[in-house]
Length: 98
Picture (cartoon, rainbow, N blue to C red):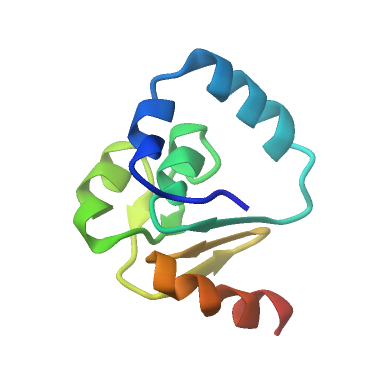
């Protein structure tokens, strides 16, 4: 689970975070993000050329990182589920377990 928040923009530039994130996400059977946590997934190539959602104000940044912004509340593609905003965090478990 990758949480969002203001710190995600700083972490996009952090090489140590990038390396640690890559080690954790490759073997994961499922990945989820809430709000701007999807920026970290896109920045680490997990969402390149794939649909994802994030907070509506950050869709442009998500696109600049290589993901395809989708205006849905929850987007699931393969093992990755992204939820649009923090209040949507209550929605993605329904998608995950359905």
